Amino acid sequence: MCWSATADLVAGTAVASAGVVCVSRVRRARELPLAALPLLLGAHQIVEAVLWRSGGGTGAATDAWAAIALPVLPVWVPLGVLLAVPGRRLLAVPLAAGLVTAAVLVYCLATRTVTADIRGRTVGYVLDLPHPGAVAAGYLLATVGALLLSGDRVLRLLGLVAAAGAALCALLWRTAFVSTWCAVAAVASVSVLFWVRGRRQPPGGVRAV
Image (cartoon, rainbow, N blue to C red; front, side, top):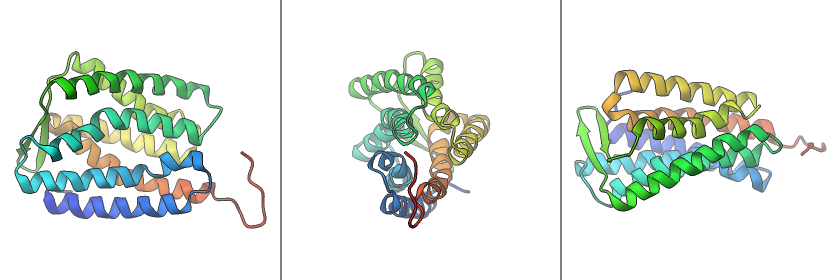
């Protein structure tokens, strides 16, 4: 995939559409946050399409993209998994990591300026972070770790794809890691549609909680 305004818009629209289907088919309120993940990530890619058109820099679109990518996702993903798969005590670990990581990122976004820099076929986001290695580790533990620890086959597969995508993006697009990994995660999140279908209550049957 070659990232551009058009690519982000097309991918974002497709992923968001899958998210709408997921939300419309969910059967339990506690599963709604996780079912809405493709909708969130699809909208996220559409925001980046706006950034491409504006040439990057600072502004509302950059701030909106950074807010979703940085503090929102490391809380949204582990909390969504914890709600959807109750009883998995291990999920408290990625959720705690996500809360701490998000608190650091919220502080950085509130006190420093984030800039979007168009770099060929990718977008680099520049934000001065304290201990970036530790922040990245906490971020990946929260997002990828929650999926891998979910105990659900489809969610574990999504976690494996997200982990492989993170390794690939770090290797190939180190200076645009956040942007490229979020794009990979957005496309991979379409698998949540299969998770929702698998959770649907069979006609005339009773599904155990």
